[in-house]
Amino acid sequence: MSVRPCIPWPDKRLRSPAAPVDAITDDIRAIWANMTDTMEAMPGVGLAAPQIGVMLRLAVVDASDARGQVVRMANPEILHASGQLRSHDEASPNLPGVWASIDRPRAVTVRFVNADGVLEDRDFVGLWATSVQHQIDHLNGKMYFDHLSKLKRDMLLRRARKAG
Image (cartoon, rainbow, N blue to C red):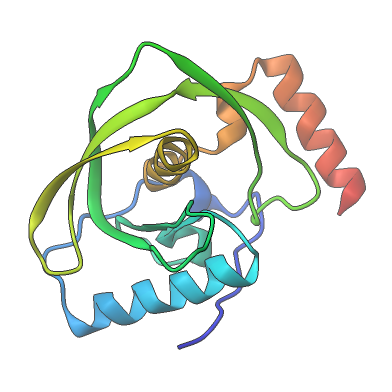
């Protein structure tokens, strides 16, 4: 497949909710393959379709140490989130050169349509959970820095403008 360019912040598509996926087709599988290639090229641990300008509720996540364990998700939704938080430095290829420490639930249960077109519930913990939540934020038109206070968010965006 191929590596796709990530659209730059503040493209309005990054603030728009993505459309649900009706069925897992060869076109959807091709988008997932491009997303996986793009994620690996960054390298990153996840990618949502809107990040490459595809406005569908599609995400890929691979937080494994050895790689090659990509989870392909259509229409993911969080069913349950743990009360225990985990802090992790998050960034986005849509806003290169900056990152921020974000607190998110340490574990989540997510329902999604998998690559076989089957509805699946799966538990994610640690970096997997962080990445899944980060991708679902993208699908909802949110960026990781939306979890920051206004002051910290403004500082991060100023740093990004200077870096770019």
